[in-house]
Image (cartoon, rainbow, N blue to C red; front, top):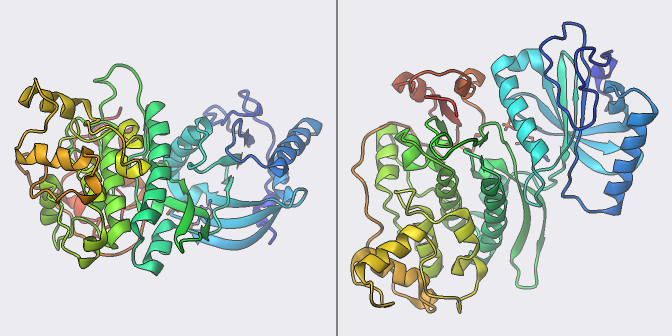
Length: 454
Ligand code: ADP
């Protein structure tokens, strides 16, 4: 499929060094048409074909002026989806035969706020290189259009795969959470917080059914529009912007208290819960109720599906969804989690430092677990026999709930509320109140209520 915008006739930016590979230009000085081409410096794709294609692209860019004309190197194919800002097409590199997904954005239609989010996404994607994070290969930009050439995920959204199956088995879920945990640990290590982790933002590159008839999914985390890279001291690194998608939103984000990367961990918990049973942990028919439930954080395993899920998995969920982010397991700790690694012989010690201190405080002279509800829970989590441990009766201590509202539904929509509301962090306003929240009646809709910018 030929793309009509290939007729755009950009010239290199006269105002800055944006024609250099690896730089994204948002050159404010340029009133004349500005060409920007970004070449990725990193890639998680390791095939020979990929490197050959990289070499050829280098040649393309050195042999002649880069331009939107380079899009002619791709044959546009079927539409993969309609995003908030534009269509996503499958495209084939004519020289290598490699398939890509190209997101085409009409800047005028998207609006300046949406473009800021897209630019934020691009600038973060430029700095990452992980096998379970979507790879951004190239960016073409003209005054009217922006094209993102991304790794193709042929199997679509994880949400769609799950909806087809109802839910995943424990082993299938473990594989998905292993990949997700690895991606998030990588991001957190780089001080990047995703802030909108949800099934709709996880794409499936490929999948196969193994000998045990279990589905193995190669997943990729996408949509970094709400992501932030923390800078400076710890307190500066705390965030206060209420954003994300209600059913995946951590209690501290709802409260707009200072929060950190731990909000992503909560969302991993919500994702894991949904993968295992097919429905979210908290559902309510009013905004207030949903937020109250999240802030109480009482996980219920009432659906009959949970009878076949191990206590070890349930306890991992409780660690991921501790209401107090300081007591919530970190991404790094999650990588060593017994359920996740499948290593039931590993040490029966808590991995979260605060949990360790609490255990020591309760019983400084012994390694034995104490008998409060919470320690019982820890014992079940970390016991070498955790898979057969009795399900604890009580979850972690819950803070007093304050009410905030959000309606929930089973919609799979992941569209932005509006570009304006999602782009709020650029402003330094107080938390937008009910009116703004009430616009977001879909459970999977992304919210953004800026309080202060990082
Ligand atoms: P949104 O703007 O809603 O976040 P996107 O623009 O990222 O959505 O994508 C819109 C749709 O295009 C997705 O729902 C998905 O079906 C498809 N899509 C996006 N990126 C890819 C990709 N890399 N590979 C395959 N399909 C994709």
